Amino acid sequence: MKFKAFLTENGVSLLEKRFLPALDKLGKICHLYLTRDHAFFLHNLLNGDGIQSVAQFRKEALFDDYRISSQNEDRIAFAVDLSLLHRALRSSVSICTEFGTGSGTGPTPNRLQIKLVKKLPANSTQPMPFLTFETKGFKSAVIQDVPISKPLSRSHLLELQTALDSAQDLPRTLVQAPDLNQLQSFVDRMKHVGDLLSVSIAKCGDLHVQISTTLITLGAEFRKLLVVGDQAEAPAEDRNVSAQTRSSRALLRGDAQSVQVSVKHFAKSLCYHLAKPDCAFYGIAPQGACLTVIFQFFIPGSRQMDKSISLHCRLPVLDPGSS
Image (cartoon, rainbow, N blue to C red; front, side, top):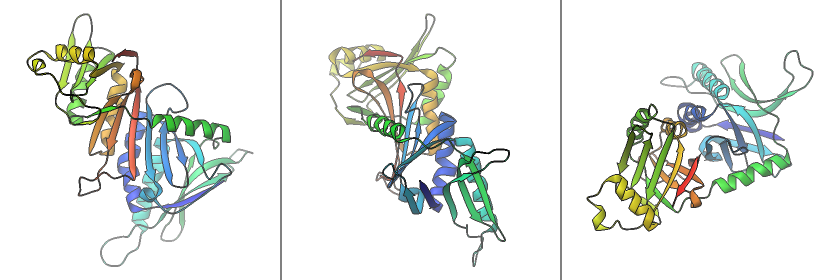
């Protein structure tokens, strides 16, 4: 199997400044899954523990001169340590910039090549796989090797693809999240109250989050948010009642869903603000299977969605709640 490509300037910026810092907060190890047309960073898709996360890029968003071949329909997947990957990329970029040569003003970054290689590590008799960054400096080539797992077998690759396909299912109702920093400060206060967070999402655009213990109940309601998918009008008599009553009535009418998730998981999902999404949506899967958070990115300078990038995560449900 072979993989070789050059990272574009946009690809370097996306990974180094935005996505790798965000992904690393979610979990140190993830699968990098490469196909003919896409690159995926996948967390926890092959096990049921923790937040499942899918970051997907069209190859043009990150690379040019992209070449991949394998006996598994030109698909390659392996586990990688994100902090090591980020460190190697950052180091390669600084070398590129330092030794780049250009005419006129300032240095021009050299092209940064990334490829899959097998090497014999020191004090070892077995060749090991690495993801290698290579940049040609002023007088020499500089190579940064990132150790990776053995690429997945055909059966495990099929298992990963099946898990990825099922993780792409969208909830029937999505509400646009309020400002992520606002949510973050609220969740930071909640962390000290308890471990379980109730999340209710109504088809009229209400998002209700609440944490309860025997001594205290702390909650927040965000109303009339943008709704995508199945929608419903809130009855007039619900306008002047408490948030809890409004949420309970919507659940009884079948116009809302509610689940319980870990406060820690919810807080972790908010770390994706580091990837600088333009907006986020929350939804609950059918039968309350999970809480889904979808992040959207716009084409710079516009309000049009950038379809070359997608990012979402699914939080495991601790109590299926009600719908």
